[in-house]
Amino acid sequence: MAAGQVRSAEGDYDYIIVGAGTAGCIVANRLSADPDKRVLLLEGGGRDNWIWFHVPVGYLFAIGNPRSDWMFQTEAEAGLNGRSLGYPRGKVLGGSSAINAMISMRGQAEDYRQWRRMGLEGWDWDDVLPVFRNFEDHFLGACEHHGAGGEWRIEAPRIQWEILDAVGEAAEQMGVPRIPDFNTGENEGCSYFHVNQRKGWRWSAARGFLKPAMRRPNLRVETDVLVERVLFDGRRASGVRFSRAGETFDVQTRGEVILSAGSVGSAQLLQLSGIGPREWLDELNIPVVADRAGVGRNLQDHLQQRAIYKVHNVKTLNTIYHSLLGRAGMGLEYLLFRRGPLTMAPSQLGLFTRSDPSQPRANIQFHVQPLSLDKFGDPLHRFPAITVAPCNLSPTSRGTIRLRSIDPRDAPRIAPNYLATEADRQVAADAIRVTRRLMAQPALAKYQPEEYLPGPAVGNDPAALARAAGDIGTTIFHPVGTARMGQQDDPRAVVDSRLRVIGIDNLRVIDASVMPTITSGNTNTPTAMIAEKAAAYVREDARRERAACA
Image 1 (cartoon, one colour):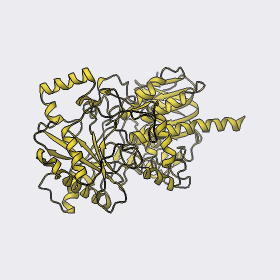
Image 2 (cartoon, helix red, strand yellow; image 1 turned 120 degrees about the vertical axis):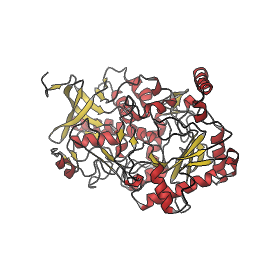
Image 3 (cartoon, helix red, strand yellow; image 1 turned 90 degrees about the vertical axis):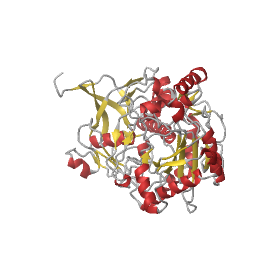
């Protein structure tokens, strides 16, 4: 084929889905359940045929590895004192659900009530709770808050740590109650996280939703492809252009194009396709299909302050990992029983509380880890330590995802704008104070905790703590909001409440980018809910269109 030539891809499809992360896997499953609909799913990463996609502790090897991670970097952040952060995103079937912390967390009921107050019909807590329950297979069984028999397996952790039990006791001494379950709508309290695992194996969206559907003859899954842009017939999305192994293809749909490439990828692809802020597109000479000022704006993320404490007289993963006998024991325990440290999420113990008493609800979440390292992808420290990391659940800072060039292979500029507001800096400083108060409780005295980061030299005054927050703050990989839902007349809205791109026919965005505000906790499960709900919208709208044409 001559250089620059574009071929037509084989096949005639009702739906083309871009991205096989959590949302894309669910949408592909639900839409291909109709045998009369032909579905094409395009994924930039490869197959999940690496052991560390399935052994839970594999995140230690997957994050920061170009085999499994897109290896994004943020721009230098003023709020982080000039630092740039790695920005992991899963590069594989299952997307980030194949490399994430596996924590099953819905957020708070108030998160969704806020969406409804923004005029987003169908997204109240009472609307989304049945959706969460529908796709769950929860170890607690079917009950008021949980479902059974769905594809999304949720289990209790298969390991306990003495030091984490002690931190839980310290939280009680500080006035934070023990609760059995973070997913009832009100999560203030302390508990062990429930995790997306089945019998000691990671349960990604690919394993739960996509693999069973791949047996269907009407679902085609292509991996290792680069989607370059959406194609249009006037203001109707008609297909996509993608490349693989040096060849470029156009593929058409008689139905919808659905972007499920995540808060980074979907925003990038919309802009490459001519949908975005006119001034951004004009700078790169991209023809404007739709001037949507909100595309790539409204980026929100959870920034955590990773405080590290050295401990004594107790085991942590640091000490076990750096012992040959310890590593052998971990491997044997996993091989024989599917239990032990190889089954662990990076954070086992959670704590939701208020950064100060004036907060109307829990506004910080602690992830407590029986390990420490400089950053994920780096080796564990050689001294026994734990990480006690609070994050601001409702940041007021907003960042951007913006094209670097017109080359779809170039990663976009990711500028989260962390700690840009006084409110966020205050919460960060207060969160460090809460951390110090927690670690000073009597329950931890026998372990002699020593503050390693931010360090005892950091004072307790607001300026010192805010600077320390910038020094130790890091993403916990929850980017949302870059193609947010809103009303038709909202100039910053990208999609409507049914996730249709405003001003364009037959184009939807279905992933975490549509969240108008970030949920209070880990974002993978809310993304699954969005996909489940949106797939139902796609089917409903198709039925209405058929009825109107009959």
